[in-house]
Image (tube, rainbow, N blue to C red; front, side, top):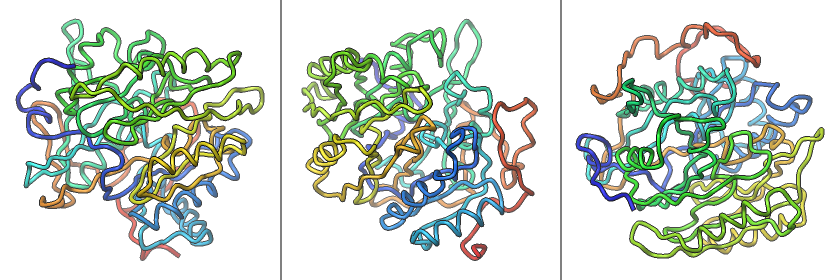
Length: 421
């Protein structure tokens, strides 16, 4: 349990909290696939996997799609129309990205039941390509763009290490919450010297940041993630909240498998873990599929990488006998939602699945007003901000990029449906 009260004037002290994924959404944010190097030799089916995902999501909520430019928008719109998506709920937004994994570089949205003027705000963490890939600067700019587009207050957390200020690095896939003050994460991701996100910060330092900015009162530290995960231990591949005091956690039955021991250790930690009120959790085991291997590489296939939307849960499937068991377990836990399997054997070649490529934008709490676009407000003590240039692409990245990305001529920030042909 984090003992100290949140620091004044930061989000938690102002009444903001990190909501659970099952709370009402205003929209889901995704980025349309464009980087062929993320699925080498297998890019062809990927847009059609996205079509199927958007087809389901657009039935239940708005889907905001980041696109590289006009040509990308036109291709995506045509494919979505061909695939039967509800285009009334699909909105294209100009936003150049390095990759599609919005879970990790999109902002962390907060809600505030007490605030009339600012019921939704966001945290703009630094994104550094999982401390692994150099081409991440376009992705790192997305939170600023979304704050401007949505008219949301934005904080950019900083810490002092060795007397020098440093922005905090945190990816959305590294955390999961019950919305009531308890958060799941892993030591492998946040504390390991390998792919170190925040060198020099201790467990206690990170817990203080999570308390101040996200309203977290209890952090449950798991150990390691699954084999094949290039993020080095994201929790959204292993353990997820499905209710205020209920988690699912993947387990491996084969003692010879690389995942067996770390997942057993996580299971044991969860059985003794307590939430923000000191209560034990209900822990529901979820199976793992057989290893998914392509071109000799073990891929991070996991049923825990599901996405919870309004009235819907999308679950990755892998042509595996355990698909049915995983869907049945999750259907029993989400009795108020339709549980739908999405074939992810191709998608997982990009080293991510459904939760990795989606990011929820929470709805404003009941009784508060929705923010108005172009009203972005920043905490002057936490961020240096300029509104110039946000309606267009930023200047080209001065550093060479490891992987290619389509470019296009500038166009207005939001692309309305009248442009779809």
